[in-house]
Length: 208
Image 1: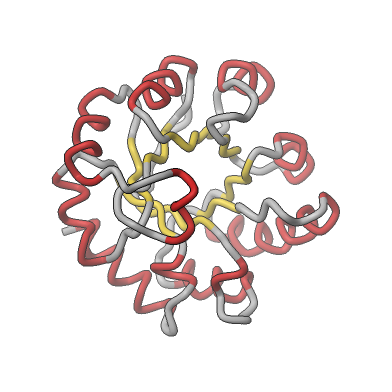
Image 2: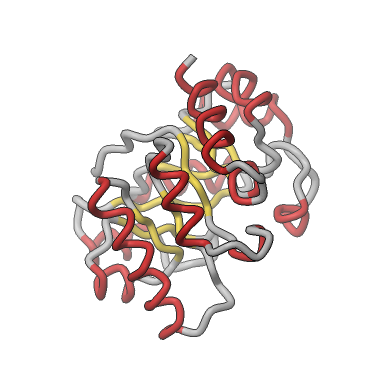
């Protein structure tokens, strides 16, 4: 299985950039030390998504930052990306693993203890679990789970767990204490006025 050697994962959402260019914000965050990016722009047509992914990959690849694309195994192969991120209702992890081999990353979004266990058993490299705290982007998945549930999931998971949902620099310590390997964030970086400072703050808390 591929190595998960990062603790901060930025999940993209170009609607949260305040009209600023997504690639330009990602460049700033990467220059500030951002170690991994998950491209999640589900509303884009295939060709537009391919173009955007290519632009971002041109930024991430020279810096050694893995670009993990949501769901689109075809685009992962087209751009030779290092990984793919699956929803809980995507293709089974085991099927994707057979297609892409053992050297590429597979992440899985999970919303229950059973999904976390299944993802690890089927060959995922890591899971993203949430929402841990309240956040607008995760309200369709129900009420936030809280730190106690996160701790239960982390104890049961065979693979690294990234907490998502309302994560801030101030909550990182509690999330890590609950057993999370790291955090996945959207607005905590992309919605902030100073992307560099926000990235630094999160990384500082993750490394403390």
